[in-house]
Image (cartoon, rainbow over all chains, first blue to last red):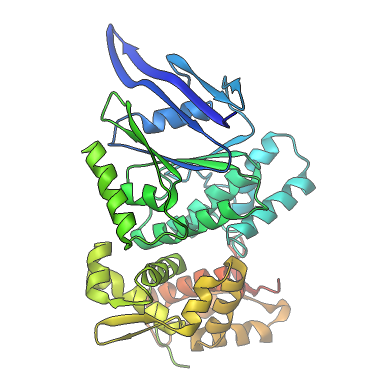
Length: 249
Length: 159
């Protein structure tokens, strides 16, 4: 059984007699211990689909199954990292990371211990008392990551997590996310990441689900069998990147 | 004290640059890297400067190359990287001064304002503030120092 199954999912927005089909009969699966990227042009519905997977929205038709059961709302075993960091500016790093744990009714000592562990894992030791305004973009996204990891999800959803960062910080964080995912001590089994960067997808993913322009349909699911760690300058990397561009453009 | 200004750059950018340099086999032409990253000279020079100050790369005649320490740094996990950075930072004059000052003071805590005022004797005010911002940012990441935003105090991070 796949960890996640998306079966014939469509999303249609209707208003004042008009309708807009954003996603059209999308189907794919995410197995355990897989890194899957959703790639396609802006507006093709990738982020909408990710929100539905996370239980933040619902399909108009079709089904999303997590561990064989329909997703009907927010699931504690699925966490999200956002492009815009989504931190609360009046909370410190530790308080932001603890937020999801507090919402689950975890006692203060236990959540502090868990928060500290993931703050350490993402390299934020030393910034526990900092407020978001003191942090660079890269540090803010580390907070977003620690907050998502602290709830110990099995499936981590990431919506263009590096888009708001400069090129070098983004590269640094990509490597760190891959290191974290490959850490056997981490509870995260699979990651599903939305990106409009094809090179980024080839760098990070085991499978790339390519989408057409709106309405978003799956063009092809491309396996990425390149050995890790990957090198952007390798011939095989460049060939695969070109292949995916050819599918979408 | 040698007031060599620290480049106004985050450590994440330096680490990202080292990783890209590693992809190129550890050495590359600055021009090619700038093109690949779509960065102007003013954007890439501070990153290179920071990498050199930290002993992680060397730049000469338009090329940049990882040092042995740079390679060790890249192979290390996040906590070992922090140890390497802490050691390198402690060897920079401005950090040595901050650390010595903290050691001398009660409870190893000093208001950030103190450091800015001292630096303002030698630098324009805005440069003094910018320098201290970088010191706090790098020092916190390396877990050499901490900063309490409520009290405005910098303190020794003793683990």
